[in-house]
Amino acid sequence: MIIGVFLTVLALVATLGSVFAPRFWLADLAVHFRLQYAALALAGCLILAATAHERWAALAFLVAAIQALICAPLVNSRAPAAAAAGPAPSTTLRLAAVNVWYRNHEFQRVVEFILRERPDAVLLAEVTAEWEQALAPLGAHYAQRFATRGTRGTHGTGLLLLSRWPMQAAVLPGFSDIEPAVSASLSINDRSVQLLCVHTSWPIGRENSAVRDRQLVLVGDFARRQTQPLIVLGDLNVSPFSRHFQTLLGAANLKSAAQGFGWQPTWPTFLPLAGIQIDHALTGAGVLVTSFRRGAPVGSDHLPIVIDCVL
Image (cartoon, rainbow, N blue to C red; front, side, top):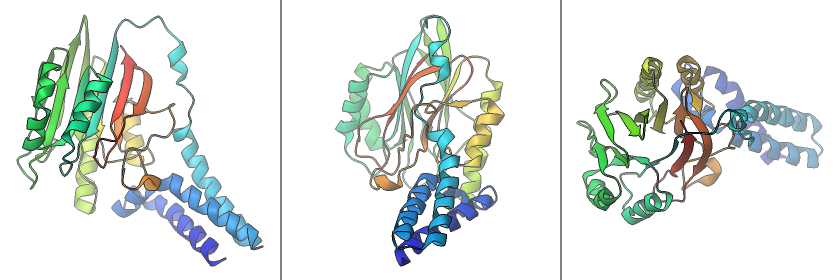
């Protein structure tokens, strides 16, 4: 019984605490694990029911049901309804993104992942000078590249964007001095698509969490200004369960590319049962996603993501 009560109380506290998520950084951090809370409450319910503690079991079931209802719209596995509509696509595009993790030294696994998946463009985050050197052989396959390097921070990380197609890229002003964001326009045959490549702040602590929230607002501001098809790509350090994420989608008229393809946890690879999705592709009007999936592990604490879409 004690274990069942403990699991139930833990899930209940997390459920009640989520009310304060938009105002308190720690509550917002905890809200990402709703699926895990539902599982804990369900486990508590089964234990309590088996030990004939009906009232506690009923409370545990209620908590599990609440969390499950919140999760359901975000983790459904149905294909997007729009996928079956409209004329045949004229331009297909495959994108990939991976936070390589600056502590990771399994360079060849990342190179093999990219060569195996053959994306038209790939974003790599937390890239150090050592990583840039290790990825240099990819230049034979990706003629276009754009790299940033942070001016603050102890690790000297940045973003690296590689493309098979011609592109014009620039740093997004005001986003971050630690890992500047990249705005890039890709020309694919007679079509163009705008990419916004980002790695937001790690939201641990009130100050860092506020920086992450401000960066999400900047992403939304950028998205609203675009007139051509747009894809936001990268490690947003926020899950779909956060109100900040949902506000971004609504305010900027964006859609999560993962919606309709089931739950896709990308971090942390070292603790799969606690997995949440913080690596995203967000799409604007004119982009139809046909596939969203995770790639094989590459030694990072993140899994790569691969997105197929048509313009």
